[in-house]
Each structure stands twice: as C-alpha cells, then as structure tokens.
Amino acid sequence: MLEQLDLSALGLMAGAAFVAATLLPAQSEVVFVGLLAAKTVDPTLLFIVASLANTAGSVVNWWLGRLIATGGVERLPARLRPDPVRFAKAQGWFARFGWPSLLFAWLPIGGDPLTLVAGSLNYPLLRFILLVFIGKAARYALLWAGWAVAA
Image (cartoon, rainbow, N blue to C red; front, side):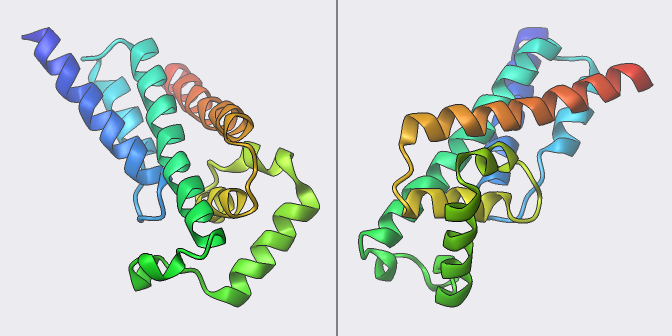
C-alpha cells in the first residue's frame, strides 16, 4: 500500500513540477511542501523528482524558444506566441545578464519566459539544463529546509 501511495505521490509531484515550469500558470511549491508534511514519500526522493521534473518543464520552454527562433512561431497556438516587443526586450535582458540569469529560472515572474528566451537565443542545451537544475534544486532544498525547521 505504501509503495503505491509513494508512486502516486511522486507522480503528482512530477506532474505539478513539470507543468509549473512551463508557460502554463501553476505552482509546485504547495504540492512539494504538502507531500513533505504528509510524510508518505521519502523526502530525498521527492526532492529529486521535483527538481528533475521542474527542469524538464523548462526544457519544453527552451524547445519552444528554438521553434520561435527558427520561424516556427506560426505553428504555436496564439496564446503561446510571445508579444514581439516584449520578447525582444527579454532577449536583450538575457543577452545583457547572460548565463547567471538561468539560475533564477525558478522565479514565479519572469523565470519561465527566461527559459523560452534562452532557447530562442540558442543557448547550449546541456549548459541550460545544468544551470536551470541548480537553481530549481536550490529552491526545493530551501523549501525542504524551511519545512524541516518548522516541523
């Protein structure tokens, strides 16, 4: 029974973390802390799943950015097409601050579009994954530490 609960909880965490990292409006922090509090899943495994799934969602944004940069923007649904003026500003911002900005891809406002811009500027995928993973894992580690102190 506990193993099934672990798998469903980990699946819930993976889904929430993945979607939260895309351009869709969602949050995974509540799910993460809720599952920590429920004590049905090994916290280390929960941390790993959340960090990996959240990073994977950002890779989807990177890929969409590549699609936009290669002229495939018309293949995207209208609601996923970036405003050209804002997108150009975001590209300038990324070009100005460079790779360290990817460590902040976890931020609720600006983090997801930042990953889209990185893809549009053809930022190397493996470096992208490493930097985004570090930032997102650090955020979950802080949530875990905060929960542990409060519990």
